[in-house]
Image (cartoon, rainbow, N blue to C red):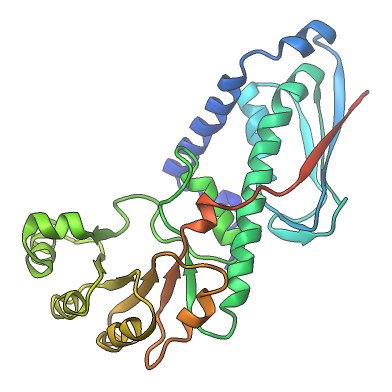
Length: 290
């Protein structure tokens, strides 16, 4: 279920989004070319077009960028956010001072092309899972500073978010377990420390780890880099009361077979590629002096 931009970002998410926009504008510095060519009162129109068949994701960033610049502007979306359009579709019109428009152009396009690319790749993985009942998850393998917008793009493409930060779910990995001595001890210590305790997920690489995580009543068990017979055996050990997740090296050509594992299919499959390897979609902004 797609969550619109305004509803997706919590106050903390909005704060981090604003920081990423401000940093992107700061990186560019003053638009000295435009400042030297255009009078402050000069106005400019712009149209953003999709240059390929694509999902359109990130249009609300247009308003956020101009607000950050403190410039007067108007903009209008010509398509609905998170919908698919054919190549050469006009997706937004903008009017703003020429100096602000030229300053904002690349920042806006960088966000929209990146987020639309993530949504496109996510949608391809989601199509492979159709009919399996398995849900696609992203990971924390996101671009530093862009966690919230990248996870927004994943759910715009039909995927689900794992956790946006380290507080939404506690995950026991090898280093945590080794430091505490066992899965059993680590789970017990976390539940004693937090009241209420966030959900606990345990990363397992062996069948013995899975058995121990089941006995500890973890909320979710991740089968990390398991495939074939070992994955089937691991999933079969987990009662339906505990969620299961498959992770590690999942590709577009392997995800469906993993989802159809018997005798128990996983509840989730997580894919880091959604955010760390998506190819940006192709959009352009054409500027017209008024």
